[in-house]
Image (cartoon, rainbow, N blue to C red; front, side, top):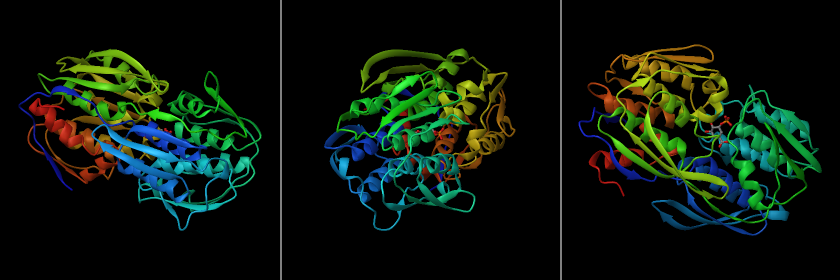
Length: 437
Ligand code: S3P
């Protein structure tokens, strides 16, 4: 689907709750499926990626009842497989576009004596899986992958030995897969990272009766242990909120409040960076929800933004926000530099190349190297025909650019937004009319 955007004459005004957090939704569904008993999850993101996880755990023997489909998300009752373990699936499990689904599932399945084949779409079938299969193989699971260590991935689980891992890259998907495998190993499995990635797993597992020891950049679990059912409420997704934050900052006169967003410090690097760029953003802390801090974010149009340097250490806390932040940087005085962003080359697309190409097509100034990105602000954007490459975060970042670029911006394969934020265009339209729910 082609999406056409023109610069808006009206500001974005209003208060809105973006959909539930994708990372937390995946984990809530997976941990409930692994648990003994019935879990109730509210505010689950209803998107293609989370539907992939729901279908996967259903194929493995968990029973997922959708008891309500509301604007704030799905309410699910999940009857887990608990001590019986997952059943061998009939046919392969399609993980769609979802890296979190395929990588976390490998950890879930590694310790059970069944065989499963995990597949994905064209994008997922290009993404590196050895970062998960190699350490899980050290623990005792067996894998067959397509050439280059990519999906389809065949997994034969079995008895696992606990292990100590020092990850070469900060990755919450890898960390979580290894910790979940550790639940089936007799002894302590410890995972250390070079920088802190999102810590939803560490925060959520204790609610399912699984203690997680944390020590600086390391987390460990001691098995064998079977999670017990729990209730989870999913807060709004800061990575989806990011696009509305960016739009409100760039469109003159805007004043938008994003309600009940996860303010987990491992997820809100974007807000810290925007504060240094001079953005008019005010955060009010609300209640903790299931171990996650939440609150409201009020953002107003900011005429004078200044460039900054985003260091490699900050990147994990804004890894999914780089495309949007790069678009915001086109409006900042000076050159914004992103360091240590090579991981973006192996996301749903090569986001580093694609965002630089997109900004240059819009007459901005961007240069990508193997693991850096520089964006020189102050070149007014001019509408262009852009390809999302089927990548949801590129589609939304380009749409934000289109709201301020002169002339028309056309974004190809815009349906990719369904992966994380199906109501994105409707929410932008509602804010432009000032008539938010
Ligand atoms: C995610 C972790 C991140 C992120 C992805 C979701 C998760 O990936 O980019 O969108 O839910 O654990 P990495 O762990 O590979 O950095």
